[in-house]
Image 1: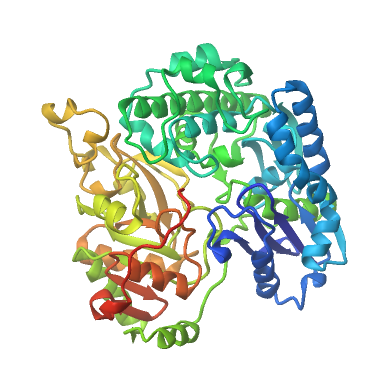
Image 2: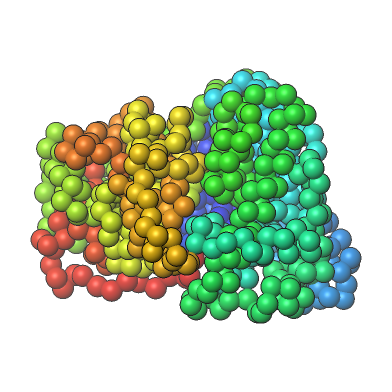
Length: 600
C-alpha cells in the first residue's frame, strides 16, 4: 500500500511516500525550486517521491494525507482575531483572501494541483509531529514531546507511543508558545523568523544571560511541571504583522536590531538569555514527562526540537535512557508523520522500527547523469574509482583543501549529513573563518559541526552514544581542550571567536561545545570510508561538515546546483560520485560572484 504525505502552505513544504509502513522517499520543495523554506505546494517534491517509488502517477497512491487540519486552524485564526479586535484588522485583511480562496478548500486545491482522484485524509498538526518522532524511532515504546510555534491550536504536546499506537496526554495551546517566544527574540535580534532561530542558538554562548530574569518576570510564567503562560501584552504575533511590540522594546531597551547591522553586546546577551530560559522550560517539561509516564525513552519533534543545545541537556540531565529526535523535526517532517499516522493509527498496521534510513531519502544521480551535465558545461574533470578517489580526497583535506562532497541520496531535513556536504580539516584554526566568509558568505560567528566516525566519538567528545542527525550538542573532551590564557578570559562577545578552544578548533564553539554528527558505516558507507581514510592520514577521525550551499540558498540537490556553488565560491575540490573536479583546472571565465538569495 502506498501513502503520500504532504506538508505545505506555511513554511518548509515537503512530500513523502510510505509503502507498507516503510519510508521510501521524502524531500523538501526548496531543494528543487531553490527557494529557501519554500512554503508553496510541493509539486516538485511530489513528482520526485512518485518517481522514486516507481509509481506511474500520483493516482497509484492509496491515500494522500495532509499534515494538519485547515478548518481547525481557521477556527483558531478567527477566534484570535475576534479576541484581539480591533488590533488585528491589518493582519486579518491580509490573510483572509488566501484562506477564502484556497486554504478553506484544501481537498479541492489538492485535487486541482495534483490531479489526485483517491481518498484525501487530514492529520492534526501535532499528531503528524508525534508520528514522525515515534514511528521511525528504534523504541518499542516511548514518551513523545512536540514543541513548535503552533499547529491548529496546540503549541506543545505530550504523548506516549507503544507498538503502533500513539496517545495524546496533554497540551499547551496558542497563543502560549515556546516556539513563538524564541521566534520573538529571533525577530528582535534581527534574524528571520522560521529560519534564523539556529543563529540565535549559535550566538548565545558569546553573551551572558543578563535578561533572563526580565523574561521570567514579565514575559512567561513557568510552573514546576514546565507548563507555562505568556503575558501577551508584550507580543504582536497573535494579532499583528510583527512578533514584538513597543512594550517589549521598552522592556529590553530599544527597537529590534536592523537585519545585517552590527551585532552589539546587547544582542549577544539577549540570545544567551532566551536560550537559557528555553532550556529551563524544556528540561522542566522533560522531567515531568519522565516522572508522569514512567517511560525510559523519549522522542522529540517540532521546530524547537532542532535546538540541539537543549536536546543535549535533556540527554545529560533527565534520566531517560535514550532519546531520538526526528531529523526533519519542523514542518517538513510532518509529511512523513502524517503518512505514518495513516498507516499505523488509521489503518492499524504494525511498525517497522528505526526506519529513518539515516535520513538519506532524497534524489540521487548516477555517474552518467553527472558526466552528461559536466560535458555540457565543458568542465574539466576526471573519473576516478573509489579505491583511488577516497584516499586522494582524504589527502586533500589533510593538505587544507575544502571539498564539495556530493553523492548518494539527498538528505531529508535541515542538516547536511555527508551526501551534500562541504568538508574540511577540523584541526585547522583558520577553517571556520575561511568557510564562513569565503564559501558560505555568512556571519563569522556561526559555528560548524564535526562529523566523526561513530566508533571514535567517545575519544573526542563527551558523548557515549550515536548522534547521526547532528541534533545533540556535547562538549569536546577535556583532554582535547585548550585552556584560555588570563588575557583571553577577559575578552567579550565576538572577540572570543578567534581563540582556539581545542585541538579541533574549527568545530569547537566558544563554550567548548560541538553539534555532533556520528558517521555510521551502515547508513553512509562511502562517507564513513572517507573519514576512515582521513584518520589514517592525519590521526584524526573528525572533519568539519557543513551544508553544501551558500547563505540563503537551500542545500544543493542536483549536479548543476553543486557545480554552480563550486564555481561561485572558494571550494577547492568538487567530488560528485566518482567525478573529480579541481578548481585550478576550471576555466577562469566560468568563475563568477555569488548569486543573490533571500536573507536567511
